[in-house]
Image (tube, rainbow, N blue to C red; front, top):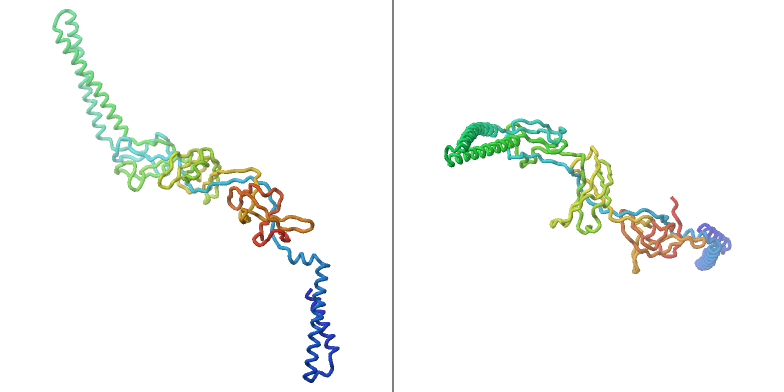
Length: 399
């Protein structure tokens, strides 16, 4: 169009120049020539505008190409839409045992475990000082031997006194006294035997055993030190069983009706690029008054790379819809009637933008569920939607 205008203008100028007065050296002549040129320029300009209008009417494709809005579209297709609650958690073990002395602190006389060593349930880990208890056992056993000797004599005397009593010899008091001595010594013997058992149990308490299968994750004790089980710096011996692990997270109380035993969980350890599928195996019934949350746990499969206290991303599924209609969340706009999107619609030979009111549902990531207002197969305007209007002609950006 600009080329046509330029050609006409040049032609008109040439024509004007060729037809102009030859003698234009005077002031009056120059003024007359200027007026003539202006008049002819106006006539040429009007002819150019008329030609442009005629060309626009005859070549409608050119106008469409200039006014149609360039946009990007996405075809709507049903998908399985899932909404997750995103939380932080940590890996924990079901069997983490802090080893402690059963009968109180004691001085370490022998150590049978090393850090990192595999141990079994019931395996001897430490030997504590039991010298005093062993001496008590010896003393009690010696006392028992004396009691047994006295009891043997007392029973012999009682039997003799009883035989004499049956023959009518002796008094009843003598018989009762002999029987009482026997009973008293029997009670002493029984009490002594119980003392031996107690002392033996105390001696056994000096042997420290593992109560779980696992790995000695911490052995922070030396010969001669007092073993108490735990100090200000932490446990002295800790056994960890990594064959049974779980992820623990704190769930805000506003999700109490959505997160329960059996809820599906995705556990991700970003540093290791690992993801595990699980379900909630435990959810506490009490809300923590300090952070207004409750504890939830999910079992993890055995994996040698997992370690207690590793940080984990926990995604708990609280909503799912199959064959759901979704849209990019950034395409949702709002007017006085509510939420709407623009779709590209074929109307005759033209592609135009149409405004559609929608009812939205849950949103997760870059997608939002459309409850109503859109159908599968429709083309939603996903690029350039900010500056389109209802009925505007469109051109689709083909990538």
